[in-house]
Amino acid sequence: MRFCFFVFLFQISFLSAQYRFLGEVSPENAGNTIYLSLVEDYRKSSRVYLDQIVKKVEVDSLGRFLFEGDNLNIENRMYRIHLDGCSEESSGAHFLGQCNNSKSVLFIANNTDTVEFPTSFEEQSLCTINSTNPKSSLLLEWEILKEQMAYDFVDYPSEASKKLNMKKWFSELQNFGEKANEPLVELLIFDFLSDKRNETYSHYLQDVSVNPYYEELSNRLQ
Image (cartoon, rainbow, N blue to C red; front, side, top):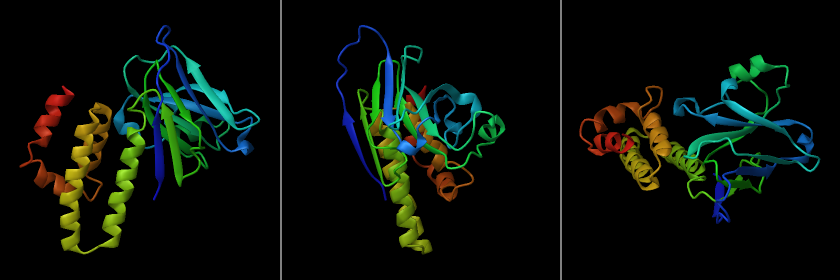
């Protein structure tokens, strides 16, 4: 299970809208390319897509990277920073999402934000986000909740336990999404719970017919 730390940074100045996304990876990646992607379709958030990449920079000799500029959306959007084993010539592998040793982090930000990853996002057991945007860490929190949910189902695999856990986790995830007050997060949660490929689908079919949450969600998203 991952233990994540999220720190809110105060924005010092809004005189010029400019973003800064910075952090570090292992020094062995010095000279490699690292990418910034804009994930406009929440259904394409599970892996890297070539047409999502908006910027690339080179990792310096100490493993540090920096994305900055003033061309992002002023409203919150979903972004991914990723590092992988694909060369610049292997665009086909990028397109198919088949790059070796791909490491990435999803976060929420806008054109005025400073987002820092002081601990390498390659470290799966620990993740840290410092940001001027209090919503930046929500996607990592969502991933942690999914991990906790998975542990519950593995620990108690009986059918009776599964039904109880489904009811518990549907409620917890819906409450988390509502309190987050961020449409991007609620869309991801809804997509997960209603996905026919997931074990949640059968419970979703029952829940959607009796739970007013879904109509309220539709109203919030509109």
